[in-house]
Length: 180
View (cartoon, rainbow, N blue to C red):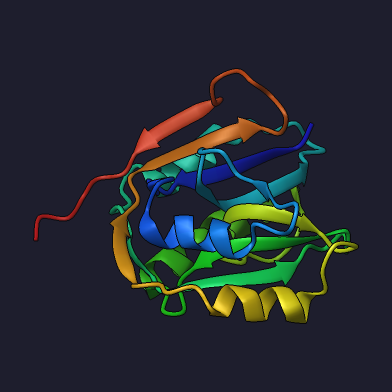
């Protein structure tokens, strides 16, 4: 059973930059994400020892401060499968505290024998494009034309989920916001 830990990203589907992105790519059959925007902190391909992973997440997340991320780039990359391009929102300046949190969780999961899919790549999937429809270079140059103003978001809700399951998450936690 494949599982993953995600942190919600409260994006507005009708933001001007998002509408502009959709208009720019209107001539291409993009499969747009319809809500549920998140950052996958870790994707677990396998838990061969059938360890209850919730204590690992509680250990790290119960005292974690909600990260504030500056989303400053709309980007695209080709998925590991090589079959689709992932149109995404990302941050070029990720706080060390967030990266450290992600790495600590990932390291603890590896220590208990979990098989993780890949390295962490901070991105929020906005849409998917089949590679046979457009090459990465062309898609990237179209995306660069979209006017985009960077913005900060506080990420407070984390969930441990089963891939493909429509039911609620196995574990959810609200991270505490800082008192600035």
